[in-house]
Length: 278
Image (cartoon, rainbow, N blue to C red; front, side, top):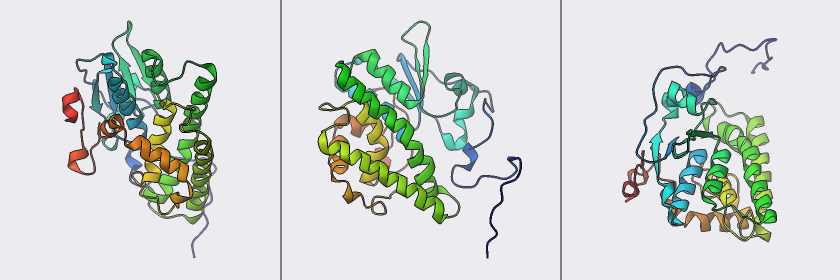
């Protein structure tokens, strides 16, 4: 018979949190070691890893290049979060929150740091006037869904994904709680995509890139390997949308960048030119 956990009066970080990503968790901010970030030849310097949050930015950059925005050429440097690269002094200067992705734009004076994936998507879309509608109504709807993803994904990643895949023990209450929420979110998307081809309306946008990187990959089985568990066939409009986006050439390129796992042919740990994706 297990003994119910009773929280202490004051929590202290006296024991490892457990799980695959235990080494990335700590209750304080700031750098753990001195190390400068590398800098390549392009104005846009991306420091990231090919997680769902990371691929949002590489997909957008590849889409911008496909649209003819040559100034969107970029260097993508690998940040190995399992090895603590995000806690280096150089990375913390670009993102004090020590999370990937982080972007440094050297093409402006003074150089600008941009952190948090939604902020980077919005910054690049505005910088290149692409994949974000100019019309007030369509722009607002696009931003509605962009920020929906920012608020919803922690329940999917830190909630469902953590307890279903990574937690050192399976906790029925936690899995049930976050599976319920993941399915509710998929139903929200399904209802929207039943009435519209894309989340912002008639046109593909940064909202689709942001949401697909988590929820599109989820229903396609490339995040958490949970498609069967979540009965994703119940969300046909999400599946239609997810498959269409997955078939875009720029998306196929973007999801390979800063990737260090899976089939070797899909891995491009760092990207410094288009030739790296050949």
